[in-house]
Image 1 (cartoon, rainbow, N blue to C red):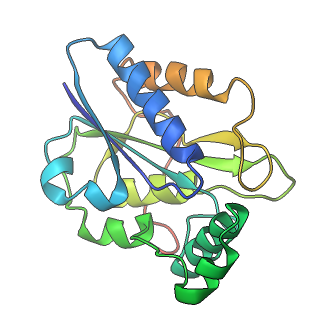
Image 2: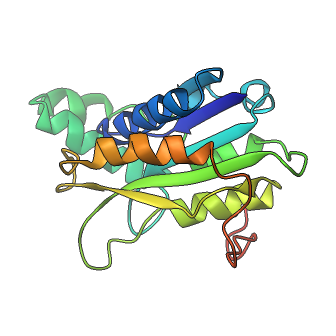
Length: 194
C-alpha cells in the first residue's frame, strides 16, 4: 500500500496533524510506504502512485485558505516571532495553497481512496476547510473512506488542543481499515467545484 499525506500549514499545527496521521497509517499497516509532504512538494507524479491520498489544511475565513489569507497569516506569524521590520520590508513569502494545488491534481481511477482533514479553532461559526477538500477530492474521482475530520487548535496560532495529536494518530490508523466510503454522504463537486 502506498499512502500519501499532503498538507498546507502556516503555524505548524496542520503539519503536526499530518505527521500524526502518517504515524497512524504506519502503525495500522506496517507494510505501507507512507509519504508526508507539504503541498509545494506534492506534484502529480507523487499523488498518482497513491492507494490512499490524505489531504489537509488550515481553516481560514470559514474554509480553505486563499492567497490573501495565507499572506495575512504569514505576516502575523513573522510579527509574532518579533521580526516586524522584516515582515513589512518585503512581505512574508507565501507558497502555493491547496486551492491552487487541486488544479494540477489529475483525476484518478475509481477505487483510489482518499480522506480530508483540517485544523480549526473551536469557536462558534469558525467553519472548516475539510469539507471543501473532500468535495475537490470527489470531483477528481477519489473514493472518500471517511467523513472529513477537523482537529482543534487553541486560538489562531495554536497550540493544538490537548489530545488532538493522539486523535489524529487513531484517525490515520482507521483510514486503512475503511474499505468503503461513508454511507449516505455525498461530496460531489458542489459550489466552487475544483
